[in-house]
Length: 434
Image (cartoon, rainbow, N blue to C red; front, side):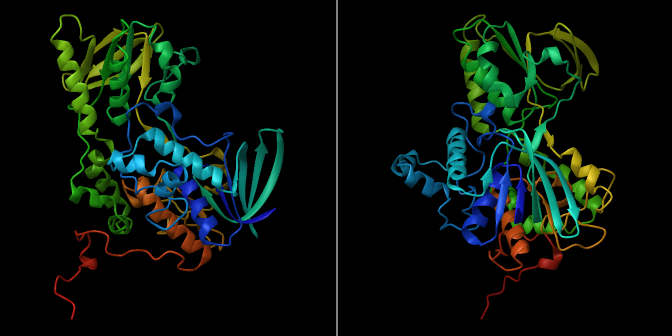
């Protein structure tokens, strides 16, 4: 069967693309997902956790506020609009965001679940996509002019893990599924420096009252960094900044990424305040705290018996502590399928031994020009900056992709999206226009 576009993977980025393509074009599209239903980081859908971006950063609003797949329309269709109005918050609960995404996926006709993409190859007339139907365990073949790779990210584990540790030592994405078992243990360690580590540490504190376990937070950070949310810093998450960044030489882009670490890896101040408040109140009662936070501390390795080998990064002192379980909130890394490197490594241009070259419209740069685009939605920091995978800008990215696929300006791209000027080549006069 031949399609105009096949999307691989179904996270928020490809789900938004599927929605915009279905309602704004007549293109024949198919989006393939290995899971049997839609879910977005279900192991981190904890009570009282919220998105770090406003609800307007849904799947479609920044491209088409009139879309039937907007978050506000979801509220209207599910009878929650007045409740949300009274809620009076811009950041929505993460559980609600997942419910919204699931609702959109149920409205779309161009999604196929239980489909494992086994191989993708570029041939003379486009892409050949081979899948395994996980229900029937049979192979199927599809053909497409364009492909969009949206396989997201996978947990980054800083140390070697043994298979028999998996019930005691696991990535943060599994936390909610294993939390009940943790409650039966004596000592739990959380490793990481970002929002997920803070939320899991706070969640464990909230569950301590009726249990006897001790919880410890181990972080390499010299201080628990707050997420920067000043308005000028948020302009780093605008199309104007992304378009400026992607034009810089590769070396300048690599250096520039370090400037914005705190924009992506800081912790919500509300979360930090709640942790401090809870620890302070418990400190007023002897032997009530049963929690600690180790700064400057790197996890070097883990031994059998769950002994953690640690290093204090400033004092350069190494030591070990014993624990009963470890939650690794140590970030994510791009999840690029093996067939990508096998079939495309020699066909595309590379900016370094690790980073493939990406065009302005998020398509791979082929050595020999082709009319068949291969768009990439992950591993984009090196090409489009630290904002490249932000939920708000994923909609902007999808606009560019749709315009490229249709060879039309289906979506008008806003130009003046920042009050700051990032490039000397893009200076905007402050003189009034007559």
